[in-house]
Image 1 (cartoon, rainbow, N blue to C red):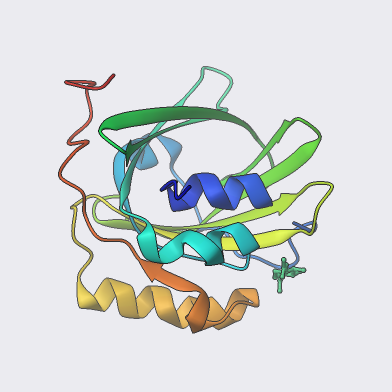
Image 2 (image 1 turned 60 degrees about the vertical axis):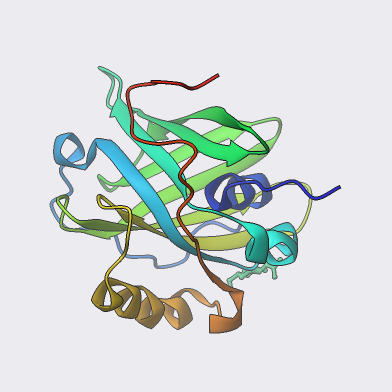
Length: 186
Ligand SMILES: *[C@@H]1O[C@H](CO)[C@@H](O)[C@H](O)[C@H]1NC(C)=O
């Protein structure tokens, strides 16, 4: 059975090692980072991701923050004829822009490496569970299509986190789960 899962979820299912020296966006502003993003490209060494990446489509990530400044990540992705949603909570950590989540014995770390808030963000993820640790980078964009310039910027970062270009998936858009706000999701 072939099930299309969003890259972000796969990366999170897999996660790694205490994040070595992954940079975080200086002066990270959570308020400006919140809102809806398209996951337009992903690279990961998670074996499940590598197996499925060619069938994946772009998913939608909606980010919000609790009063405690913890990060809530809601993902919506097309699966068969429906839109599936998935929600994860990450606690704020240091420095600002670094978040840590745990569930079912797996530790997940998320770092906003780089963002201009208005058009793109590059998010680094690390998952450490009973299995092998894994690392992932996601390119989030406010528009549904990533420009060639953004993809190039993203690709340049791949080797800096110990991954390689053959692990990259540029995710095609899917018309099925449009826009935030919940219209038509079931
Ligand atoms: C993924 O890459 C990271 C960083 O290079 C490494 O620590 C980890 O062991 C790798 N995991 C797998 C499953 O290859």
